[in-house]
Amino acid sequence: MRTNIVLDDELVDEAFKFSSATTKRELIDCALKEFVATHKRKNLLDLYGSNGIREEYDHKALREGRD
Image 1: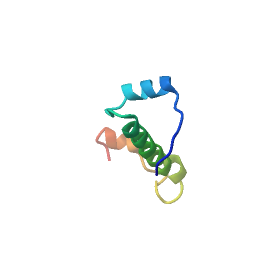
Image 2: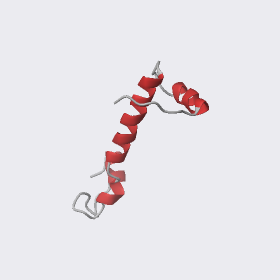
Image 3: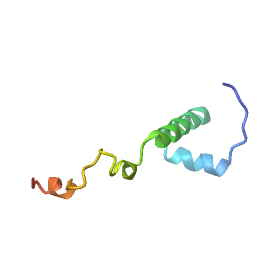
Image 4: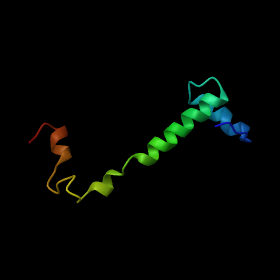
């Protein structure tokens, strides 16, 4: 899709510092992909109590090597 947009130059310059993109098009493409991926991820807290995470599950014990 071709479109013309006005971008905040300071924001674009700052985004380039965090990206390996070399063009504005590539930068916007990367930003859109990251935006969509972020919003597709489920918040783990939403899974609590929905048969996804047992209440007695002890993640700290697993980190320390305890059962």
